[in-house]
Amino acid sequence: MTTPIPVYLDCDPGVDDTLALAYLLASPNVELVGIGTVSGNTSAAQAARNTLDLLCLAGAPAIPVAVGAHDHLDHPYAGGAGWVHGDNGVGGVELPRAPGEPDARSAVQLLIDLSHEYEGRLHVLAIGPLTNIAHALAADPTLPARVAEVTAMGGAALAPGNITPAAEANVFNDPRAAAEALAGDWDVTLVPLDATMEHTLSEEQRGMLLADERPFVRTVGEILDHYFDFYVGTYGRRTCALHDPLAAVLAAGAVTPTRAPRVPIVVDVSDGPGRGQTIADLRTQRIGVRDHDGVRTRLVLDVESSIGQHLIDTILAG
Amino acid sequence: MTTPIPVYLDCDPGVDDTLALAYLLASPNVELVGIGTVSGNTSAAQAARNTLDLLCLAGAPAIPVAVGAHDHLDHPYAGGAGWVHGDNGVGGVELPRAPGEPDARSAVQLLIDLSHEYEGRLHVLAIGPLTNIAHALAADPTLPARVAEVTAMGGAALAPGNITPAAEANVFNDPRAAAEALAGDWDVTLVPLDATMEHTLSEEQRGMLLADERPFVRTVGEILDHYFDFYVGTYGRRTCALHDPLAAVLAAGAVTPTRAPRVPIVVDVSDGPGRGQTIADLRTQRIGVRDHDGVRTRLVLDVESSIGQHLIDTILAG
Image (cartoon, rainbow over all chains, first blue to last red; front, side, top):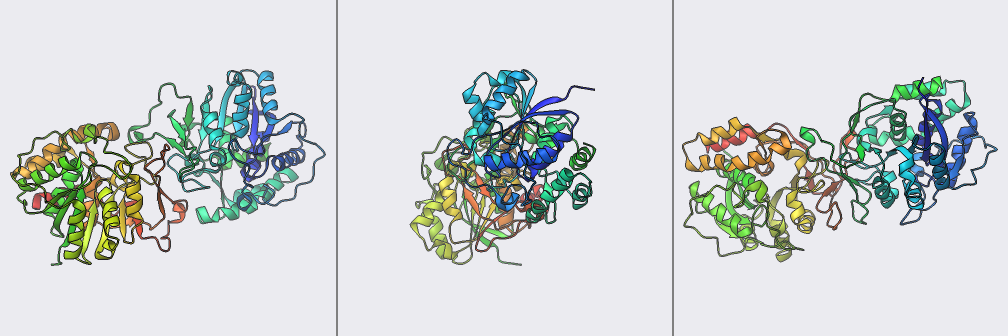
């Protein structure tokens, strides 16, 4: 057996964050050593409450949860995406209130502390806006040297955006933070909509979660209900995209990218119509996009196989 | 037999402009009633010289050729794309100098005059930057009412750009002109890289032009030589994309778009990394992009069949 990868999760649950969290808790490849929250799908504070309640329900109340940035680098938190994730971020499902409270540290401090504790091994998995990550880089420029790898869900290269025609929500919510995180001196795996939109769950797969005897697993299935409604407008049927779960499965090393070039990515931090988009140079894509020298961000455009059933199987076996 | 469509061509030859011109001269569906030039692939003056020389060689010296804008709306002409189109715009091929000179009118005046002469029937085919078209709209706001339709080659929706990672050259060269042309009160068929990059010519097809006995047709084949070299970096073989020719074939009604939604398109006129891109809202593309009410620009994403052989056949039969 290989040693599980120690993972710091930065998140904003969020329905697909919940699914990613359930996967990470169940995956034998991962040891979830700390969680920071950030405003995005919902506020950082609500995200922390949701995370604590989910962890308690899952029987993992000891994982520290630290509240991160409420506002973004250049602008205040705008109120979340209730029409996608429900007003409380977890599809409107009322979770049993856990006794636990957030860690006294900030998410930035928790991440820095973990980078010392797991020096050279810590994997940073960021599935919300990259605000905390940018703050951590500013607070401790030596951080990247202690982090093994960063995996971030965000952006859209050639795929349409989701929050605007050109921009994906995580990056749109804090474009400058994304630019700073991608400019860090570390290896980043960026997981954009180009990849995530190709992975979905079916009603039948959601039913497998609902049929489980464990309250946590059943609750995850219930939380997906509202999210499945939202995606009818995108896919023409009740289903959901697996944005954050794909980043989690990649961080766990359970799926291999088949097309993931290291190419320059410029984040549009302007106030123009392209604000928040991730512009990657894919002009040579027809002859195979080659890695550019010196670029440390790989852009995941495709992975070897659909992750939907792997996700369900892992959660059910967890 | 149907009456040929009277076409005003706005162009910047340009290698693919040359191919489009050869097609338009040969197509029985089209009557080329006037040509304006604009700076883009080469300067407006050089483009006029090339056009006059090509028309004379083709035995059509009577078509008026008017010089249009040298500079763009917000910035001066930047020197063209010699690395793509050759330093003289026609692949470095030295054309026999025609005795004819440009029309005394500006391209804008020629277009306005033709819109009266062919009122309600004139088709505007713009295959360079839209500078002249924007000037014409400003000079005569009643112009759109006399124009049957506009077909413009330009932009990139989900495809990568060509002049920058996000922008296509015609729009990038004058983003504000593109925005103004698309905002005009007329029906526009916009032909972006998403469609044009799917159409190419082979060496064998170029050989058919070279083997023709008419000097004009042979010369078109020669002009393609340099352009075929350029595209090795894009397609991995000697070939070329059929940008302007696809717009010409669409204007002639010789190919039917199979996916061409009328969707809002925002041209990025910022100075950010997305400058010159055409942002179309294609977020519902998986369930079929519907026409939006009140939108008069249709974005050609796909057409029914490859146009390469039709282009060659038409030129050879012309």
